[in-house]
Length: 287
Length: 291
Image 1 (tube, rainbow over the protein chains, first blue to last red):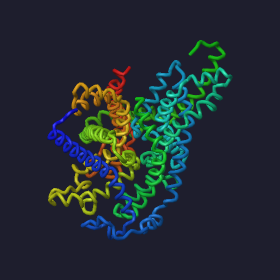
Image 2 (image 1 turned 180 degrees about the vertical axis):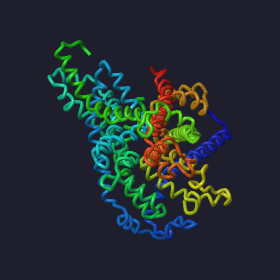
Image 3 (image 1 turned 120 degrees about the horizontal axis):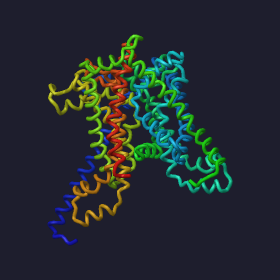
Image 4 (image 1 turned 90 degrees about the vertical axis):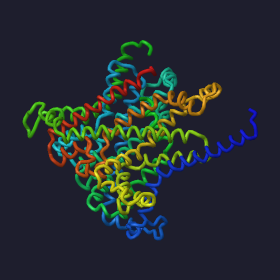
C-alpha cells in the first residue's frame, strides 16, 4: 500500500506506542502473577528484624537459612511431608487404575445405561465437597477409621475419580478405534489390545490425569481437616494451617514451611507442564 | 459396532462390567451412600425425626440468608473478574513476541500454588502494618485510605476475592488460549479484507468463536467457586464477625465446631440444590448450538 510520508510516520509512531502499551500490559500481568510467590520465597530467607519493618527493605541486606532451621525445630515437617506423599501417590495410582478402565469403557462402548453412568460421574464431579464430607465424617468415625490413611485415600479417590474418568475418556476418544480393531482382527483379546496397543498410546493421557489427581490431593485441606485428626496422618496443608492459626505472627518460619510445601508442587508442575495444560484443557474442552 | 453373536455379547458384557464396576462402586460407597445418609440426617435434630424443620429453620434464619446471598455474590464477582482477566491475559499472550513461552509459564505460577499457601502468603502480603501490599500503597495513598484488609469486614471480603481470583485466573487463561488457537487464521484474513478494524475483528470473529470455551470455563469456575473453602478458612475462618462466611465455611463450622450435624446436613443439601440449579442452565447453554 502506498502512504504519504506523513501518514507512514504517524503509522510508525502508532506502532511504537502500541507495542509499548502491549509490553506494559504483559509486564503488569507478569508482576501480579509472580510477585507474591517471589516475595514469599524472599521472606523465607530473611531474618525477623527485616520482615517486620514499617518502612520496607525492598532490597534485602541479609539472607540466611535460620527460618528453615526454625521450622524443622517447631513443626513435625517430616511427618507431614511423609503423610502428604503417601496419600497423594496412593490416590494418583488408584485413580489412574480405576479411572482409566472406566474412561475406556465410556469412550469405546455404547451400551444401555452409558448415559446414566456418565451423568452419575458428572454429578459426582460437581458435588460441593462439604455436602459429602459431613456424613462421611460420621460414617468414618462410626467405622473407627478416623485418622487412617485408608479413609483419607478412599475419600480422595472418590472425589478425584470423576475428573480422572472424564480426562481419560476424553483422551481415549482421540485415539482412532481402527488401531484396536486391526489388533483384534489379528487375534488379540480385549485385554491384550488394552495392554499392547491402547496402553502405550494413552501414556500422555495418563500423565495429564495423574498430575491433576496428584496436585489436587497434594493441595487439599478440607478432607484432611475432617478426617486426619492427629499428626499420624495429617498432611502439610493441615500442619501449616494449624501452625498458622496458632502462631500466625511467625512469618519467617511460616514462609519457610510454605516454600517447602510449594516447591515440590511447583517443580513437578513445571517439569510436566505440557501434560498439566493438556489435562486442564481437555477437562474443560470436553464439557 | 458390528452385530455379534451371543458369546461375543456375553464377553462384551463381562468386559464392560469389569471396567466400570470398580469406579461405580467407589462412587456409590464414598459419595452415594453418604449423601443418602446425610439426607436422612437432615430430617433429624438431636437424634429425633423433625421432618423439614431444619430446612425451614435455616431458610428463615437471617444469618443463613446472608450467607447464601454472600456466597452468590462471591461466586458471581470472582467468576466475572476471572473471566475478564483470563480473557485479557489470553489475548495478550496469544500475540507473538520474543520470550512468549517463558512468560506464559510464569503466568501459570498462581495456579500451581496450593490454595493453603496462597492464603497464608496473602495474609502476610495484606498485613496492615508489615505487608508488602500496604507498604506499596503507602507510596501512593494518603494514610486514611490504607485498608486494614482482614481486620475490616468489607475489605476482608475484597481480600478473599483477590486471592481467589489471583489463583484461578490462569486456569481460565489456558482454556481461552486453547480456544484461541482453534480459530483459523483465514477467519481474520477474511475479516480484514472486508475492512474490519482490530476491535471489530475481536467483536465479530474472536468473541463469537470463543463462545463455547467461555461458557465451559464459566461452568467449571462456578462449580469450583461454589466449593471454595481453603482460602477463606485459612485467611479469615469466615470472620471478622462472620463477614466472609460462605456456605462451605458455615457448614463446616456448624458440623465440626458446633456439632449440629442435622442442620449442617440440611444446609449442605441446600448448597447442593443451589449448585444444581445454577448448573443446569449453564450445561444447557454449553451443549446447545454445537450439537
